[in-house]
Amino acid sequence: MSNIDQVVNWLEDKDASYLCKEDSVVYFASITGNDEDKDWQNLTLGQLLRTLKFMVNESITQEDIIAGLQESGRLFEMGVKSTYKTPEGIFNYAEHSATGISEKLVAGLAKSISRQKFSGITISNLNRIHDKLEMLSNTKLTNIARNRFYRKYFSLYGYVLREGANRVFYQGRKTTVMLHKNSQAKDIEATDNAFLMNIAGLVFAEVNK
Image 1: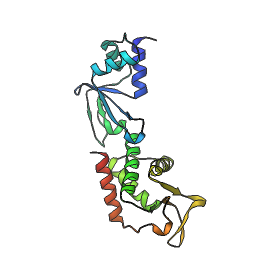
Image 2 (image 1 turned 90 degrees about the horizontal axis):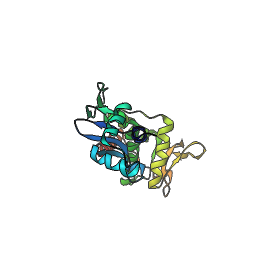
Image 3 (image 1 turned 45 degrees about the horizontal axis):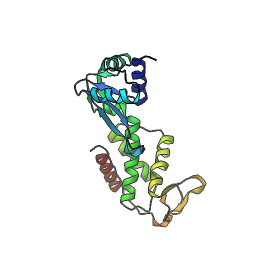
Image 4 (image 1 turned 120 degrees about the vertical axis):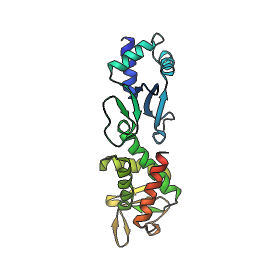
């Protein structure tokens, strides 16, 4: 395999791109291995060259990197954060990390619910918050992906998604809820829409700071 092919493989594996104005190779990843920590990583061409020489092949040159970027279509004039479709040649952080942003929003939502010491929350109210987060971030998860992220991140704080046959009786009927393992359905606090939307605003601000 040629040096250029090895560079292309690394770029594709990381989904990395080079922004000329910023002189920065960017990719969305977690350096801790914890998905909740995913963020934009930045390397200069010099840093990338040292990384590839050490991790891939010591004979790789900066010219190989430039050729690999050109061959894989990963050269951009500059980067922006926009909820709109950007012109060709402009890198849109929001577009290239849509799934990552969605996951970070759910992770942030779980952290916020735990931080506020919720005993539990109905799935309908949880979805109201999440719908607002999607509107603010211009992202969209399928119901399957959303529920998968719910289980993944809320479980970190001791919450269990009680659904299907495991639904609980709440306000006189069987209800799907996200319930803390040390709580019962009767402990779930009543919340109004304004309170839920405030949580969404706080989570969105925290994730995007």
